[in-house]
Image (cartoon, rainbow, N blue to C red):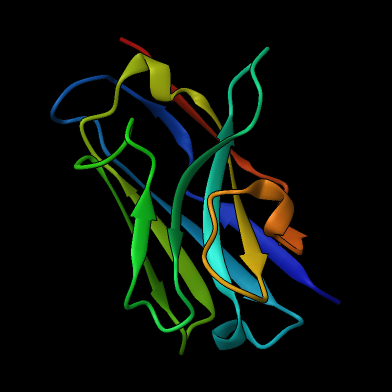
Length: 125
């Protein structure tokens, strides 16, 4: 049974000190065969791409809105992908989802085969 379970979300204040580390634990498939992505969806808005990483972790991709603040990484030995969120802003508030893609790291949600249920990130003073 395929599972992607996100964790690490929470309430954080905006600014330089506002940081979180999201984790996504995968099971039920061969993790190293899949590119991984993070997406987010704010209330009343469409889901948007955040970051993606290739199967071996050599290549990463970011949305312009998070470039320089967020870092995606993966540990294939632990079947886990991470998203480090730094210098958080109120506009980063959303439910964050991880997803797995058998083909290539992609910014398009419809390219992904498996999705987690999400973890809430709230950035507020």
